[in-house]
Image (cartoon, rainbow, N blue to C red; front, side):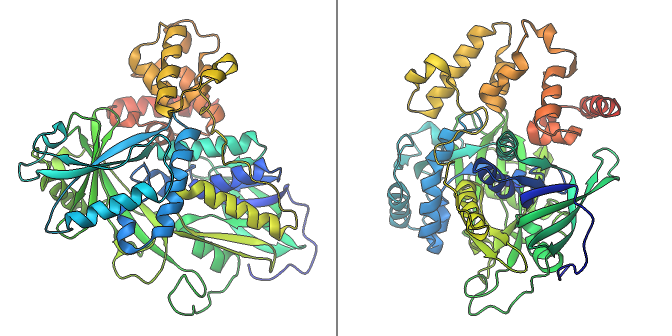
Length: 537
């Protein structure tokens, strides 16, 4: 598409104020914010929600300590300002996480690390996260998993998040605010028409991958939040030409994306304590080793330029060996490629700032908006931690383009399931989200004593206060329906289909949960068979 239609088009199937293209964290965050301001919103995503970049992160809510070394103080401060705000908004899927940074004098001087941590502690206020401290690893339990040469280090605190569930909760909130959410619906064509946009959307069947229906949408404005596909949609789909930038790309002229692959591996648990490690490689890159799903350790990430199709991405054997070696340099217990139980990769759509090394490319974002040929906004870059403020700024820009600015509302808002107290409980809300979660789990256990501890923990962590939707009328394990796979009951599967757009086994086992880590191929197939039977109806 490139020009306005000159003759009348048939009546559209749907009319909305804003069409959001892209169901990753930025897209659903923008849809949520706009819908909460009263705009009529429709969001389409070509695959499952959050199935690409947004579910393939290192799963951190953080300011980005290493970005200080690249002078990105503004980005770090912006992320740190959001860190505790997000942890409060969804304490069921987020929690504080402390990191151990062993000191390697060959890569960075101790004074440099201390200075960086001082800035990290003071760039934004902290209400409940602890500040950094030095630690004698030769005397601390935190040093026991390490080789003896690592005698000194530092500890600081950030946050952990279930990234795929964060996407789903934002989409759910948008839906409950009135937005229409269409996963597995590809935007095939856009035309500027009648002062707005005419879009052609094609829906696909999740099980057969065949097109099932074509929809037309008339929208007053379009938000391009297509992540790694954003530049392709803008240039080819919306007909906006690339202009040679003035100076560095992504600064003075047209924005461009640099696609960088980040890969992770999951191995059996490498250490017993609940801290994570930030490990500095001899190449000055960092690798995280993070406690994961109680029995595992998540190791990542790499930074490799990805010139190919963003949808065709996988972890290479070289990357697996690199991550194993990075961990083996520090931890006494070596890991090998044979230890890997799961590997995943995603393509980060980074704002190209002409940096040489992929690891040095900025993680900041840019919003580009224009009124012609019809109102549109494109999101360039971004990261999980800044999704809310990005969405707020994007909604402001859209309101200006539509001539009707509307007030902010997400600053103190909870995500679905995040308000863990109700009624008389609200007067007794603990200050710490961790304390809130502990109190909520105790009440849940008291009200449903038949639930075993493992199921209670998993459900409370995944669904928060929305777990009551699954437990309404349930008085025993038998009321949950058949156990389709270990600890996965029909009640949960019905919930995921009804409220969270789950259609396939991968949707359930690798994004809405991580039960796939614990299941055999036969058990995963049992989940697939159950979902297929429900789809047939």
